[in-house]
Length: 147
Image (cartoon, rainbow, N blue to C red; front, top):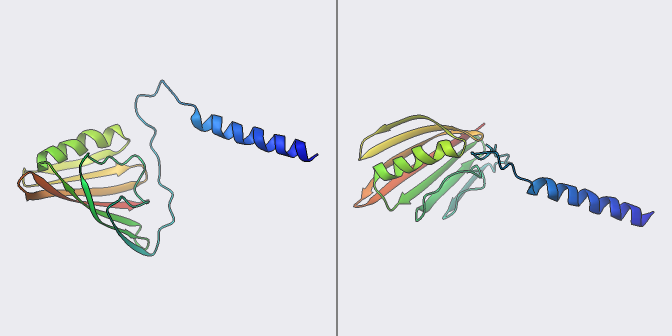
């Protein structure tokens, strides 16, 4: 009887793993995901994206994650990022990559000195504000409100 229970458990685990490993090769865009996360009341961080950020969130190479905050009361995530690129280059990166990853850009406007992108999707709505941070640098603030 014990061997039978063990065999059933092994088959169940194999079925779960096989289901997780199958892919849909006909798909051209990744599936959208909703982040399910138990927010802490208030948590600050630095250097890495908080766990509340959707898994599909794009992050440009060589960008530096600064201060982060997760506010469970408001279901808000805030991230400060420095990019080694111009405001227009970073704005172009996000307006190109967000839609590909299942986010909708609902507004994108600004100048070479300041640019704002509003987005929604993957369980969040939010705003990216980009400003000139020095020669060849852009300072960015990302705010996400989780649904």
